[in-house]
Image 1 (tube, one colour):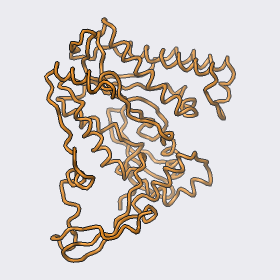
Image 2 (cartoon, one colour):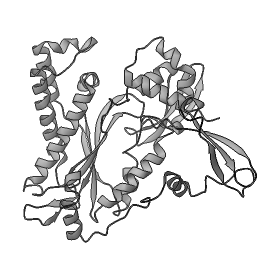
Image 3 (cartoon, rainbow, N blue to C red):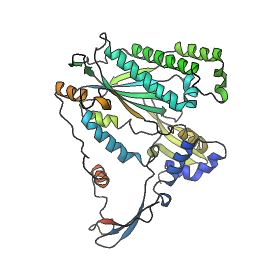
Image 4 (cartoon, rainbow, N blue to C red):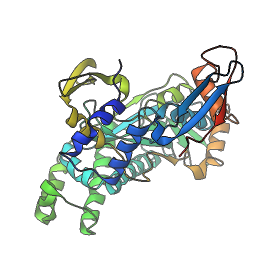
Length: 381
């Protein structure tokens, strides 16, 4: 029987709480995962209009960290983005943070996650507008991930970048086949941006320090941290990712709604330990296994619960909402890009699910002739 994240939380979350404290958002996510698609969240009674068979279905928690709830929402979100796609190449860039800053970022999540987006956006925007590299306004979207394959804390930003932009004269300017900004320039600029604002936040006393990070309350120790980070090569990379415009959508789906770990990567539980599958990127992407205690698995999973109200996917430049009806339309005309209309436009949630699964989920599983109709929603809470 397949093991799920829900199974682990349902059976061992109380054990985890005996050793660890959680934030309000972590507690909320854990409760949602435990109760997802159970009577605790209510549901509906369905009856077949042919054979009279009755069935009860329970509601999903719809928490963005729940492995059971991201499939449909991801498909709907990605489908809406079809309208933004241009007939032009796209690049994928990744901006990572040095491990020396991980603890500080985790203790100031909303502030410093937002700073990561800000540093990426200013880096790309300013370099793209430089005539040396492109001399145009580009469009891109950024997505925050906070985990590595082994669930350790590893905050980084994935950015999908349109390979071209709009000049001040309102003309389309395309890039070369290679990424238009050298990676070393990109990394150095990003490092400078992030550390500049980090020092500013420190002077404004906006940073919080707990436990082992208390040391950085001392200005000399904080400056030492900054100096160390300036001396590091911040790892970033870029690659061209798509063979055609609509391939962008498939690629996007890998990143926009991904959570720390999906159920299929949980391989086994044995004697209080969880074994998960990982891909070792440093060893030719080989598939390997990592084993940890159940309590440790839950601890690592909860580290990746985002702050309340935090916007995970953000659009910039000609892809920003304020520019979609003006500059993006202009770019579509200049690149002779067709308008890719959303497949799900005007469909109900049930119709969308049918389209995604390629089957009629209302068909009675007993008689295979009738359809299930809602006759009672008293289970809804």
